[in-house]
Length: 204
Image (cartoon, rainbow, N blue to C red; front, side, top):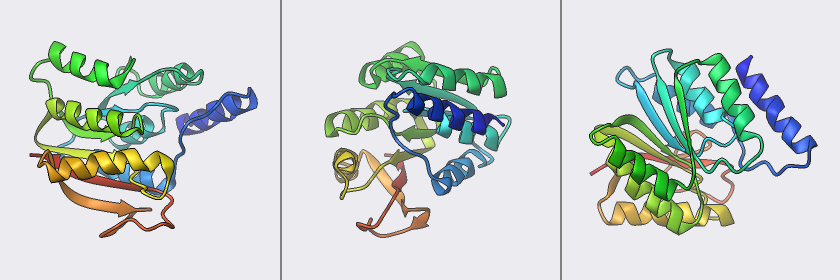
């Protein structure tokens, strides 16, 4: 029921002529749920709440999971999406609005030593923002944390920044990649027919 409310919220936004950012695929939602179902996952943090689909996937996967989301909060539909999440999963979701390059390090300072089991990066798509998000989220990771980055699509303009930032993080030993996925399948490299692509890894 809650997922349908999120879809309706997006439809309403489009009917009002508002720009709706991003998209969602069933395979990626299934992957996010699988991460949240791991027995050792209780706390998840994400950059990029947007319309609430990823938060919903995490929260519906396991009743013990809690999610903290960072988002610019610029889009008109974000507040309604947040209300949908709170109605279905009361007390399990926190939304922090603002520029993630500032809010994430501020959160890390204010909550020193606080860590998350899964860190999902799906925020700004410029190289500068994606690189900052990767670096800043390291402060919220522990040795077994899974870090996931979305939109690794080198053939798409919005994918160039995340691809460059992730590749650089690997080359400089900030992260170790443990899996690359194209439309839900493990691959060695992303091809030009990919609709969605993401990677998981861990911080060194």
